[in-house]
Length: 195
Image 1 (cartoon, one colour):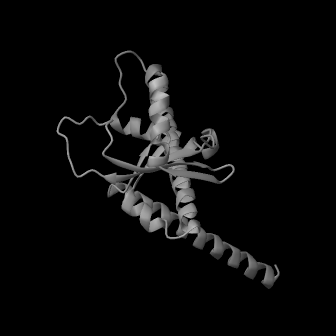
Image 2 (image 1 turned 60 degrees about the vertical axis):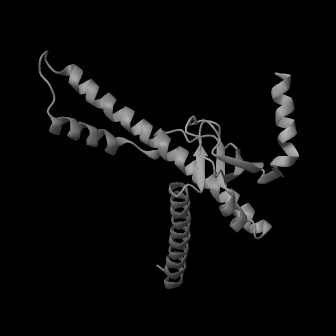
Image 3 (image 1 turned 30 degrees about the vertical axis):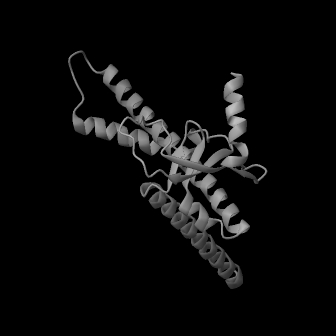
């Protein structure tokens, strides 16, 4: 093998490792922001809540804000992929245990070690291609300032703060739309009154 070819391959591998490491670090940072309450992902509504102080830090330049919103999309997609994989894996492991258990003579049960062995064997058979990846969808984001008042009668679905701005990100076109809540709040109230 040519020494220059090996050198180029190693250089490319190092570049990929650095990129993966940087991406893993960014995803970890977003996980910490979520734990601290600066971000909240509502998977059901495909909506990201962003605390206003974090948004202000990220809005120092258009490029920084756009990269942040794009990063939030990648982070939310990774969460969806991970959740889909975990759900699929658990279902497949339980299905394998159930199949073996149904073949046993009546009254005989699997031991804990047998169950663990069956689950491990099924897990080793699974590949990423067995799970259909979630489709690419945009998401809405809402920038909120924390509310200083805490209402003891508050339900989990009630907003926790005051809405500052809203927006939408489309990953296919990389189009980012955003408006202050003052600009669009009357439209929301009009739609509600029409229903």
